[in-house]
Image (cartoon, one colour):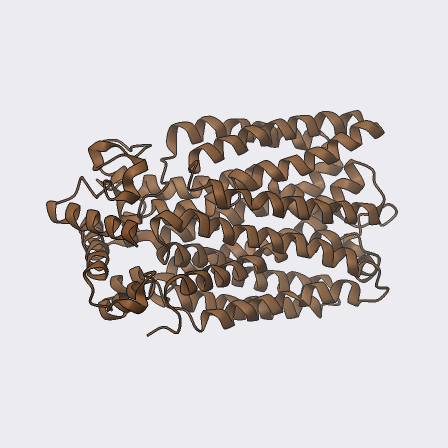
Length: 519
């Protein structure tokens, strides 16, 4: 039995998942304000790229970006062993490993130890970011899943904002604590995530996949809004359990027990196609240029726009606040407008921002600098609305249970390897080709629009089992249709059952969704 049930349990799950992503956001933002700090550059002159510093921009990019290589290997670890370990254990181990890496960074007196610390912390964060969205999605109801994941990613941006302001506040400290305290603070958030997870359940879908149906039934019961007034053997719980079990049996029959091989083949359930959509979403997120800004906002304000150091930190802090406030918008829109519309809106807006940013930085006047600063704020707005949460949600939604851990891990690995690419080349690109850096990111965003329009199915208000039916058949369906058992708007009202499966599965799917509406 779990200590919490119903809404209290769902909010506790969201808060703990959010804590893990707050740690992720803080990690992303914390280095940006330290790179140009007086005590940091004094301790690490090899990467001092400020005026007169003489440090290597290439080495600076490597020190920052090597964290992503650690994250990549953490995601690959989960690809190989995550399904065996389970969702909770992966997150537990990730928090411990990340804390060790944070301690190594905070105590570093040379570049080698800093690099090792960033790699170790990255491995832990890669494990967390591979697993938390899957764990959270598998514990969420269809009609709340998008909103809850959006809350999780809003907390992630709160972490970025917090890192900016911690860096700004510590810039007034004239000692090594100026950079050691912000780096050590990561450990606090890891402890928060670890502690919250101690009291929360394993994914019921993972439990079913590992022949632990009784435990899965208890978890499914505890997630019901009225769990206190019903029994775990209630027909509502039994229907959900049956729907997940039957979907798993069909997927296992399709994989023929060869999950590793099947993930790279299509077949009737389009396994490879679904995996590549998740990978592509994460790739688009990073090639949009968001981490050009997240990791290097103070550097951009200082070097591209020409602002003083402390003003650059202050503006980065306000940019973080605006970014966080923008990230709240999908909480109310993601399950109303859907994934596709928000992604298209974001890609088009980001393209425009990068184009204007390139022109204003090339101009170099004071007025153009103000417009450039505004574009950095605007870019974060568009990104937060459409490409912040959704690429983390889609791999867990698109992938069937039989390959969900592996597919989500590959998607996360792609996120980190493309983040590494962007973070590694940004300092060199800004110093070498200047405003042209923003041109190629503008082109990338323009290309994303047709990709999203033609290839990404809408999953709004569909259960994870119903999403399977968008991918079965001769062609992938971009929208839920009446042919699948009802239109998209009525899925939550019971008319959107699993229509293309067997008759029993249709009945189970309809029973579950009608039960959701009654609750």
